[in-house]
Length: 320
Ligand SMILES: Nc1ncnc2c1ncn2[C@@H]1O[C@H](COP(=O)(O)OP(=O)(O)OP(=O)(O)O)[C@@H](O)[C@H]1O
Ligand SMILES: [Mg+2]
Image 1: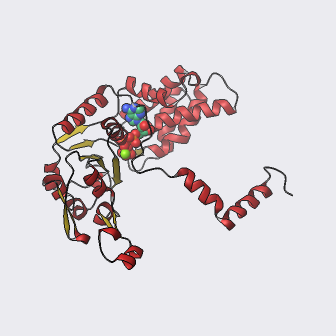
Image 2 (image 1 turned 60 degrees about the vertical axis):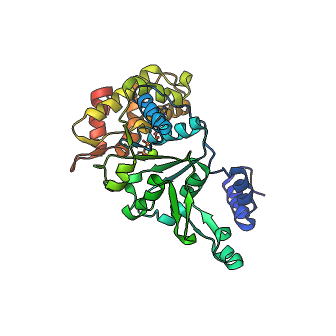
Image 3 (image 1 turned 90 degrees about the vertical axis):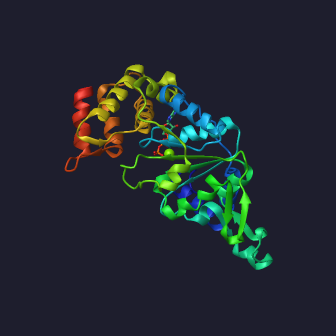
């Protein structure tokens, strides 16, 4: 009998799970979430977030569709989820890429059901866009400008005429009057993005922009993600100094996002726990930065991100 927690016991337990599949079923059933379930995320709604929030809410009340533009990790998706929560509507979203096809959005036939009942609405599995149109829910087109033009155009009639064609059923359906469409995307100059087709752009009337938050707001955001009593204020200041410096540093093309500030704060707390330290040193912060920042930034061609981060750590923290 292997000792509890020993390597042998872990291997044995993995084998058992593989063989009967019951562990998977148990975890699966415990973990299923409805597509409309939204985890409560306490957002900081001030400054630019307040302006964007109000812009999108006003668009909703005016019956207009909205778009949110901003660089990676500034809170576009988080804000859209908050809006769906506050509107108390169902929420569906799709993250666009070349792999998203019209059927991903609109739906497709289930071959087994087709075999039983033939081609009919009974064998049709609606996609998230169709469901949002029928239920009057919020549909978030995440990373909208990474989608293929042909796919984007399949949404045109629903956005303008308030009717959606389901080609598989050769049927038009009426779009619910509460249906709301929000798109979120990176600015066009970012890799992998395209300009939106003019016809689509013309149907999204209200455009809100987000950028990196002010230092004061970013501080609140990081504090909202980390237990305040565990995060040394001086260390948080230094993390934010470093991130802000990255955002103004000429050698950096794509600066770190809020996710990096949050990541560094969490990582610092974890290291302090493991090393039983109550007061973080600048050296420790530099260690954490060297684990997170090099992969979070893009530097000018020919430069090494590890070196660039080291330079900045020496400048801001006195350690590299
Ligand atoms: N106003 C805010 N209040 C609290 N947390 C925020 C706020 N804005 C952003 N965040 C946090 O920052 C992180 C990045 O946000 P989010 O994923 O929404 O960014 P994004 O702009 O959609 O990024 P991407 O371009 O990669 O899709 C998340 O952990 C989010 O919870
Ligand atoms: Mg996002």
